[in-house]
Length: 453
Image 1 (cartoon, helix red, strand yellow):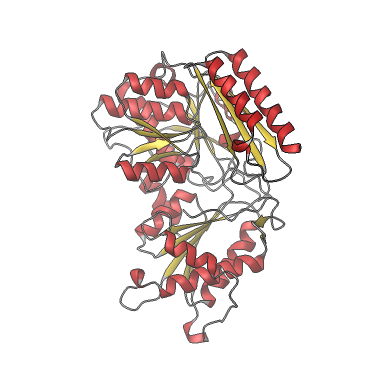
Image 2 (cartoon, helix red, strand yellow; image 1 turned 90 degrees about the vertical axis):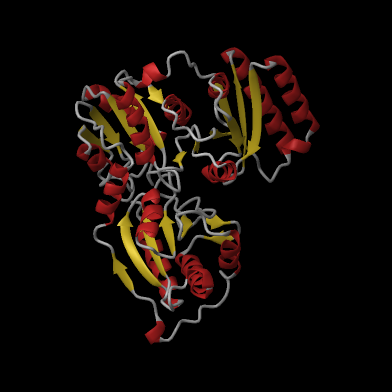
């Protein structure tokens, strides 16, 4: 995926200095169409390139879809519309339909006011950098519409959901099923609302679905992977064995056991890795991020599983996996990548990998994590009035060094700038909850004072 063109408040958002408006998205689509139409690497016997457009359920998706469609067609590119589909479904369908590119209109786990655009290549991965740069550089070029006979055409794919459901099911072993399990699936009123429950049901589970009534305004609203309290309540209410929570575009996963305990991305990756190692199916090691819990890293070390930390973001995890030739990685936020199953993070497929481990061993989530206690983490977001180079500030570095000395080898400090907001994120992790709270608050206060001076 290329970088997202995020709005911070719907069409009033900005891309750097660029407002997210229908006109901007029209030009983005036109620029992408021109670049794709001119790229020799994807022309097939002189045929025009075809681009698949998918979206989640937020209301602004209709407007942005129309603008992208118009821009692409004006450049002479054919378009296929899938309607609401999870981001990983688009990555799969591009390959299945032998298309040249795909675009997803989604702001992932954000609320409905935001929206964005992600690009995929013909291989279901991010576009090559040179293609991405060409698209970005052409956004301000005037639109010179192709002659009528050369305009792109648009069609809808009616069986997109069914194709993707079958693909997801194919990643679960044929000799196993989910019979006897009652599972609550929370789709966050998002793109997987008409898919995730069917996958689990067709594999034999007794399924209860929630978060499956999207109205354009309720995506991720007090539900899904970013708000597991709703799933916890539903699991207990329906006496379920476990719960699965996805986010608005279906690439994040959180799970809940019958007692209401939440399992985040770190813990779920650990379960998959442990099961694969026991069955001699683990290729290489595991890629996490700077946010991966220290206890998980320590446990992998005990298990002789190689582990590395990438920068925060599923893109960086994917790059690390490709560089190492490994297959498993992800983030504590619930982005989990199983390269042997898909080219990108996929909440449904990741859930099936966890369920495979549970069914194959007849263990529960808690039993897999027995003996593994996550270190407490304290995360504080510090708003800064302007771009602020915290790494060059002596006061901040001094308090950071003091904290690291006090935590010794039983904790760590992470300070990083947000990639999308004017925030400095402070994370302190360690065995002592009292210490991490103390140092997180002190570091955050030091950053606040320094950024305002």
